[in-house]
Length: 148
Picture 1 (cartoon, helix red, strand yellow):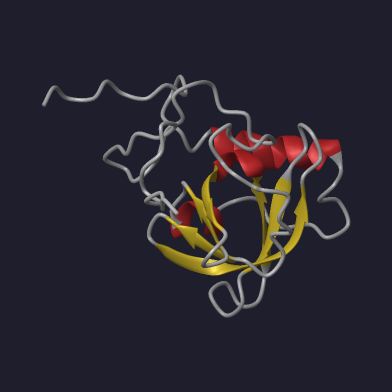
Picture 2 (tube, rainbow, N blue to C red):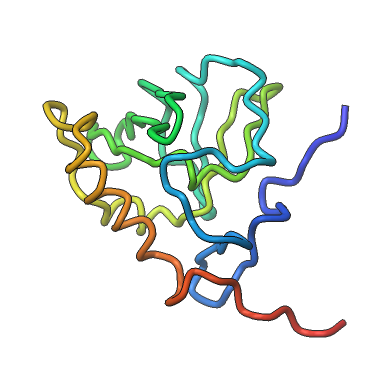
């Protein structure tokens, strides 16, 4: 079976701040076209940011235009959960049960606090989606790649 490098995707372009940019507009609540879920239940999968592990998937929604992962960060952020929109997922490795997201640990740590009473509320999701959309450079388009 072919294995996709978690740092490579037709949807991302690394840039100097560690952000990874989708080639089109960012839709925080929809998995990217090249992310293969294969009907898998992602609960229990490890979650890796661009610079290291952040925890495990505690809950997941695959609802159309409202997909997300609630990640239990364990000791990393003192046992807190974070809500991560599906649009930040750039690869799922089902063999190692790992979800790779295109944000740094710091960006995830600075995200709006997880609210267990409101995380499915559209207004709360708008706040979270706006935060994650704002972690891409202005315009949401990748910078041109240098010629090789």
